[in-house]
Image (tube, each protein chain N blue to C red):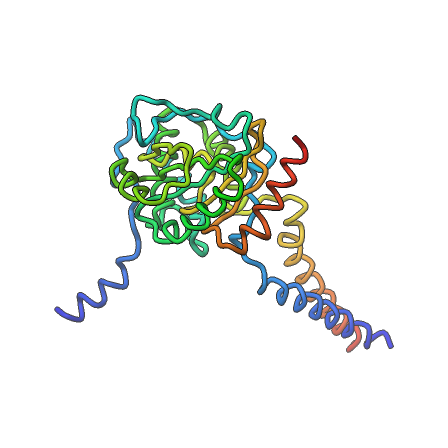
Length: 179
Length: 125
């Protein structure tokens, strides 16, 4: 009887490990919530892509719900995302969409936005330092920032119509109610 | 010659990231090298910043270089990166409640094994 127990115990342990490892197969190690959520949007100060004399800083997020969309003209997924952003802009005109041109040249950005420009303002981050300060992995990424400048959500990767409907709009509605 | 080239290709993946940077002192160079080998390239599978050529790894190396040259300590730079990228950026996970299982499971398994072996021997006697 005692001998049986010495073998049953490791067998149970083995089963527990199998369950844990099996669950691990379905976990995306990159889907980690940003530590910046519920914190103030990091401070920055950089010129606008469209007017190098105009300096934009984090105060731009005050009094509006904002999307901070990190993009680049060289990023193919960002191109696909533009139509979803335009759609969103038409649907929620009170939400300002701020672009952060990550590691990109102003001329290339202007060319990129010639036909479709969903942004209220576009920040020139040609060195990528503002992006790093926001913990960016790559482009595109989008932060949802509330009226007091606090980050409330982050979407990694392009905004698809599904993400727009299932994640973005509900979060924006929630933030509008708090106001 | 052809074979030598093919053999050399196998050794080409190691990138000496710090070659591009010039430092004010050797101590800073060592600090930089230590840091980039202890942070993860966040978009890669288990690669440190020193090994990766991903665009984000290049940017993070630049940021670490700037901070090293600005006399920031290892703990200040670590805090800066963890505050933005989370504990995921650390190649060695810290010992916190979420990682207790990770750190303690091997000890538990080894002690179980030792326990069973001892049991078996004492039973045989």
